[in-house]
Image (cartoon, rainbow, N blue to C red; front, side, top):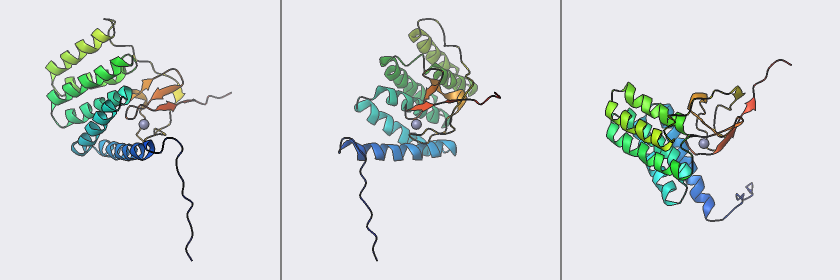
Length: 190
Ligand SMILES: [Zn+2]
């Protein structure tokens, strides 16, 4: 007795969905590797996805992915590559006016470079980010009282309050896929 399974198709352009699904699957795999500290396995996936996003004219996504690739490369002890990748990220994010929004992430990358003793790369990156922010330095970090989901609804990457790019007081951009993650107000008595 064979049960027929209804064929479900996601709406939208027919050719776009499979590529998007494949990219999403790869991204989920990469975030799992990052979470497990397996940066050498995460890195090639992140880099490839970033290159694809850049080629396909998705600069915001490319920017975040290059930044994640940079962090992975840094963890692998390759600060020069990490700097180049972070610079790619800045280029893409600057093109869509996202550097300020992503400044917290960039600051995290700079901090990581410093922590690992890669001072030269840290100084270079800090100067570039500061220049793009109009000499105002890195944007002050804003801690919101809203509650974020622990995972991105789009790609399932972990959402860490100290590592997000706030769009406004209620939503953030996923640092892996650039998707919007909405916060809910934290419950207070009354
Ligand atoms: Zn995501």
